[in-house]
Amino acid sequence: MRKKFAVLLLLAAVIFAAGCVAEETAEKGDTVAVYYTLSLDDGTVYESNVGKTPLSFTVGAGQMISGFDAAVEGMKVGETKKVRLSPAEAYGEITDDMLQTVPAAELAAQVGSTVSSGDVLQVTINTGSGYQRAYLKVLDADFETVTYALVGSALAGEYLTFEITLDSIA
Image (tube, rainbow, N blue to C red):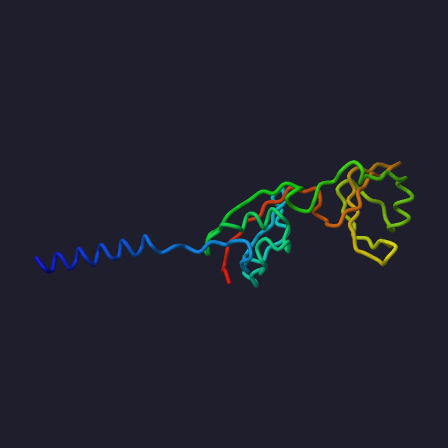
């Protein structure tokens, strides 16, 4: 009888302890390390750090794009999640006021080659207070004209899918 009671008591203690152990989740202000794979809508893997050094950042500190930050908040160590971010949650939308249309020959002379719809060219622009890297995203091109947007990231205007694994919380 004592043996049964001791076994039941031990079993109850294990069950109680298991229920009381809270899993740590990533919260604003936590420094976390993550592995991620970034894919475009066509399925192309654009970037990944899986099998490499994890990416470390402070949740909610503005170090990451807003959608990525929000996706990591609330994750548990070891958890993997897949999220699709809109351009507004990622690198920004391309709006009509950002569009420029120029003669195709003029742009070709400036960049050294003809461009096609979908091309993304890295350019350096003079901001008046110095030079800055930017991207020229070609949205429409034909023999006569090219319509493009000058953006801060090659991924502006794109829907992005991230698969994120939370490696650690410091």
